[in-house]
Image (tube, rainbow, N blue to C red):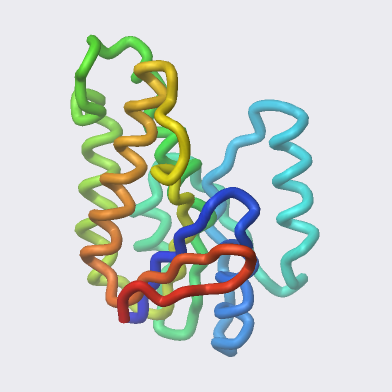
Length: 181
């Protein structure tokens, strides 16, 4: 298994970088999309992403059960692109606004089980897996408790995934910088 975490800020080129790696692999490509079209702007983003992908690539939409989708789709002759872990995290944090102040997202049973399942399955997957995620810890401290919880959990998730994959890169201005591997 070759697994890579591709980090970057908004519009940094991280998805394009993942797509270039997948195309160069020569393998059949499946994109596991985690976004949900909650409004017109997100619907348009999803439409653009689909239109930009090569016609032969499959897309599997999975906003929550990511580890199950990876188990189902991973194969020695396939390259998977997960786009993206940050939107998946957003989906899993539904209900977090009801947590008491200073509570961890671990208090959300679905979040904890899905995160732990993902971290357990990553080292076992056959084929090539490219995980795209936003690096959200480089900006301002969010004003709201929910914003700070999201930023903190995104950072923790990125660290945990980076620890269990052999390659990590950071993309800025469309240029990848290898951090690990």
